[in-house]
Image (cartoon, rainbow, N blue to C red; front, side, top):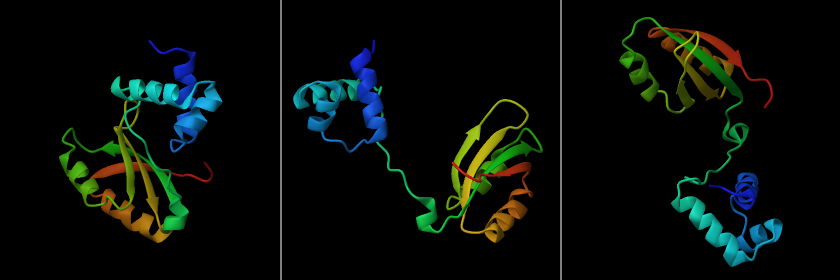
Amino acid sequence: MLDHTDFQILEELSRNSRISMKELGERIHLSGPAASARVEKLESNDVIQGYTVKINQAKLGYHVHALINIFTKSTYHQPYLAFLETQKQYVIHNYKISGDSCYTLECRFPSIEKLDEFLVLLNEHVNYKLSIIINK
């Protein structure tokens, strides 16, 4: 069972996972070693499953961010999933969902032209509905 201090730790690590244990302890009113022990316990209990890096996609040349709802043409999804394997440079996440569509793709593209090329190829396997993200 998580207590208030555990939730404070998770909140602080969500803001900055590179924070030192000393600074984390200061923010949540524990010593550095006590904060470290708490973090290790959260990791060993699989509450914390890893740490990530937030990447500025625009700095990498990806200026178009899109969400694409996928409507499969049959119950056999393997051709669509195989297609995605060839498009890893654009696909951030492929979520299998419930609702009107079967999947939601989160993608990024360097240009509208590359997005268009992707959509032409995608349409060979599935139908889709496109939303372009204007601002996060």
